[in-house]
Length: 118
Image (cartoon, rainbow, N blue to C red):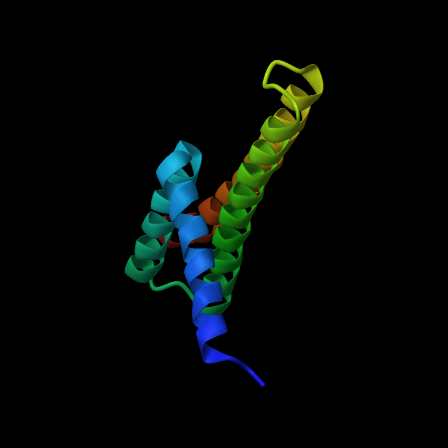
């Protein structure tokens, strides 16, 4: 049986995690503000249902990768000092993962919105 109090507690922990990352990670704040801007543009330009799905999936992917990146940074900082070369590599690879997905999302967003502008 589902315990409502445990479910509420789980959501509370998850929202706390989002607040922690939002407060401490500039890149997550930037991506979050970009997500809000994209949603506002999508409303303004009245994108199709399919385009909404694509945009929301991309927003979710980028923000999720940003959260995962934050987790990796905290984990590797716990086990090894920041100056260790492998720690630097792990952090750079995770940052590259977020950057790559962000660029893909940007290109897709430009394609979707440019169809409305031109």
